[in-house]
Image (cartoon, rainbow, N blue to C red; front, side):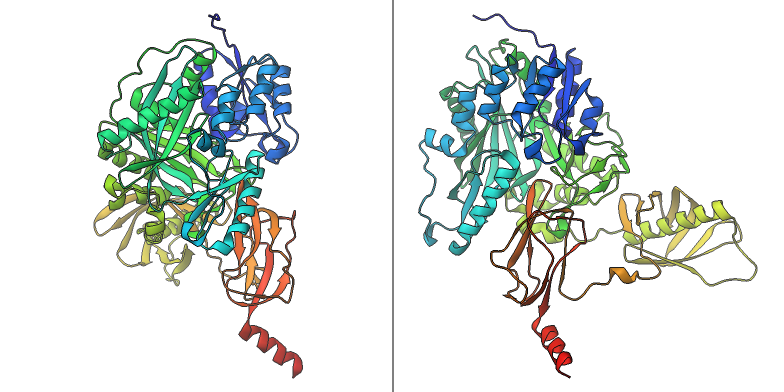
Length: 637
């Protein structure tokens, strides 16, 4: 038997949160760490936390993190003796694993043969005797077009109309190629409103295979997980045992080594195999919390050739994780960019935060919009849910729009409290209600107005006068606030009614509403946004900037990104119909369709493949019939 090796230095072939996560365990084990980074990540947190960092010239993933040859060269140059792939990018690429081993480095992952057998979803299904759909008919609908490599919801499209299959397959293939370097896609039946349940595996080179319980990952948007928990609640004992057994058998069938996950879709008491992910999962922390293990440390031990104990530790309690994204759920999950001015999680010592960002970092356009994962553990599911909702509610996140409010509302929704109501259609049914404006915004606006007034007073002086002037008026987030200074140096709020200003300083305001006193921490960063408590408010200017006026029917870029495709043959003068896809933007590794807002005539087209656009850039103009006819009449008069 081969003697165990000793790893002294680990390069993580990834970025962001997972790189920081692996580095944390390496430091605890006394291993040195090496980061790789693109030009867009030159000052990223994972670069700052590593002992050594190697530049990969370029910004796009295809130029940097997907270049296995450059990553191996970086490991050799930095003196690393092992490579951890993280998740995404090259983590399920057998050729990359062979490059690492061929260079004399330790590969912290499964054998390349196991990756080839399971990382391609088409080959994994063939191994288990499951054939993909080939000749799709109306009777097969709906179907799911799915990338053969990778995961994370990229390269996936639901098809409900047969004439959309070709176009959606092309879009899924393009997205998969950009994200994973492999454009292969396949088609499988789409099960509406099933539960996404998975089993965490850990296998060593001595024949031991652990099945570390189940996880439920049913809350998803765009086929990407948002909330995950362990164990999966409410599973019948026989079904759970069957899932664990199937996962272990699949792993042993391919000689699996290391951490991996087998995913299932559970509906009507039955489980359908989805795929095996031959890597560490984003949601691995909930398993760690329940079983009291460090999966990264165990990955490293297995890679060194050490044996796992015969049985895993016993599980305890319940863990739940929420993914914080820089995105706007109310605007079709549009990713957001900009400076993350402040990022703090009060009570962090009792709540786990896995993140690739810190206060002051910039969220760019090149990579996934996930900011962090917030994880809690408690004796029961109900306690864990309550604890996580409160931790998110208290988090101070100043900068771009995030999904924080959606996460809090989701965790407190009756449909989440009852495990029997959990399924992948949760957001399809509930998104409109979950994204309604929160209560309390008008009071946060009062705090923002008074903090601004207090800041002006501290800078320029001024205050109450014998000759009473008219009220000061400010508008934040659509809420109009009126107030005036008082004789004692405070402020009187005249609108909205029923609000009393107890105290007001530039960074903190105390208000009394209906006898209840509440403090608001207030911060502004000169970007037109004010953060008051947990509310993010847009400052309404007193005068409209004429440059912000756009023609009716203007299609503006909802986020910064790159135009990757324009509809075939689309040209100015064409008739278009409401909802028709006109062009596709790629931002943060996802493709986003820009559709015609109404039926009419395309009167302008400023987008071309390869063009990079900023948020708000004019892409096209669709004039409705009435506007077009009026313009034509004007020209003939």
